[in-house]
Length: 77
Image (cartoon, rainbow, N blue to C red):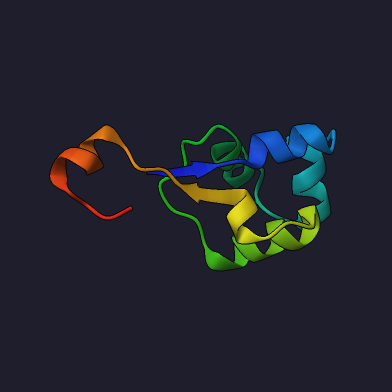
């Protein structure tokens, strides 16, 4: 499972979804899905723009979380 920390980062920087969409040119719906962690896919260029805009690296924005199902199936983290 991949955890997106966009909502936390935006909160720390006191940014709204509308701010990020306006400043980056990224579709508001895309930002909303990442913010709410409902996105099922995202383009690399979107991640690059977000990381540059938020002054963070990809590891701060996205994190791989091992789930109970992964543990049961013996999948690597």
